Image (cartoon, rainbow, N blue to C red; front, side, top):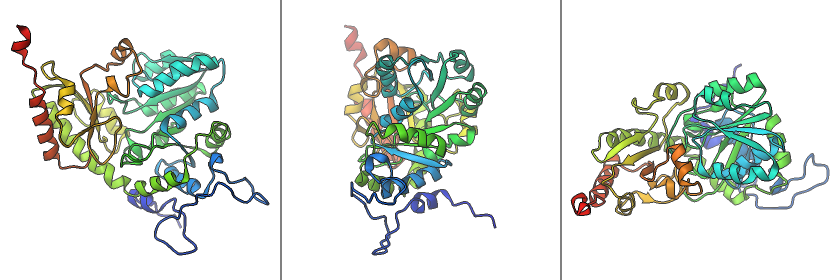
Length: 391
């Protein structure tokens, strides 16, 4: 008899639990030990080996959510991404990287790859042809991010995956902005899925973590390399992350709804020049987004008109918090030029389309009317006296 597929929220709540055999508790117990038996075991359990009871259980949940065979947990999203790079790239190899990308990843590539003799090329754009043009004979890996941070560009996941497979190239995607609730890249042919689990998986702005999901073959290769770098996640944080992921389905869907309403409202605001959100019909890749996303996410960005001071605007907000991360149940806002992309030069940011007036908005689960009121009063307070400045 065919096994019935579990629903999203059931997977979030029940898959990957540690069963409490002693007291039959309703939630997973925490195993904080750093020492486990070594006699007659297949592999020594040790936190740095990514195989403690809590780690293995939560990895089963992440794998189920991303439709993969296996997963790994890391101390941060960058620890997860760098583990992929170090596992599959060596001196003389070449990486193709999407040009619209998280600033931390860009900085890592530019700063660290030359030390290891690894070559890289940033694409001119984010179309499949742009990736094809960047491929070299020694290209071993393609890294994409869709929706991208902070411009919410959409890349054709299946198109890139098909291109890579035709050339024998491995693919990895940063799926953080979408989350497994809205997008499953493995279904479109991507080899490795990466998350900053700090974001939608954690969802409460109190966890720093990263995750990878892929086949057993790729996860085993990554694990064998990553255990040498010590980027594992503590078991208490693993337990907190499991707790948070139980509500990920309902949280993210609520954020989807709020973000779409806020994007439509902002796109009609007289003090906003541009709104970037894949759920808007005005988005250049709206039709593509519909084919690969089940929901359009809780992230958007928008450009303010010159008569609004971006910093004054953020400081005038009452409920939306001007902080440096995203995806919590609380709405947050920031200037990418001063945070996620601050390590890049002004010219590099300009090339990516990240202006000093771009606002990244992580929409939470608050009442949309309260969010609109907060933005309206902050914009009014941040208006510059244009006539006075002309004198």
